[in-house]
Image 1: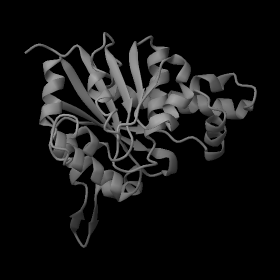
Image 2 (image 1 turned 60 degrees about the horizontal axis):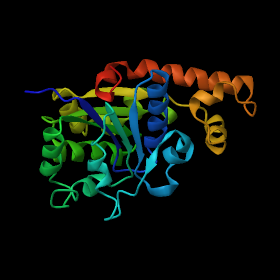
Image 3 (image 1 turned 60 degrees about the vertical axis):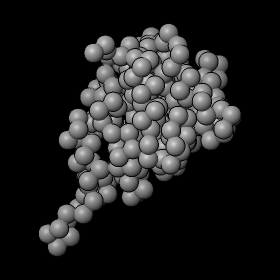
Image 4 (image 1 turned 135 degrees about the horizontal axis):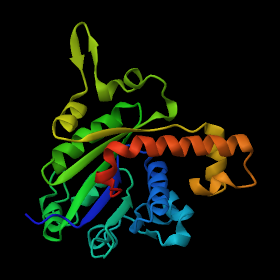
Length: 255
């Protein structure tokens, strides 16, 4: 079987506010730092955070929820770049299923076949916070996309977490009266070769300033509007992010 020559990376979750754009921004900075040529897309329309901050480096924006723009996702694989990254809005599972398939959010066979025929391997990057909806989203994507033609990376957002397993009860599962509850999505992902990584947290005040200034994280290290302490905190945040990426490097187009 011919090996795929391109990697399509979709940042997904059925829940909003879980950190998809933060992860996308960090990953784009990583591509640039490693001189990896990638096509970049913000699928949340003109207001998307990725397009706002990286508009000058060729990030293309479209609205996956619009009938006239949805095909941009699949058509983006017609490129000579080795990596194609899309930061997707919540609810994208249904929108992807409309491109070739029935639009019910449960069937994407035509979409996956098109990727295979064009020698593209898909990675779904699932962002998770502590709430039940993000864990359920992983299970729904696993059921819809399967694991034969797709690689899965679960990213636990640690912005509000101190004790990993205790703070993600719906992802890891927990016991009540000797009975295990939840955790099935994680069990399936791990059993099928999926990868689990973490994304570190950044102090809320610093994160707010970085966002208000529309800064790439790489720009924070010398920006005069940030204090030395704030710059150092961002530097530590980025280093921790890079360390956490290692298990998933190949699935993200970094190896």
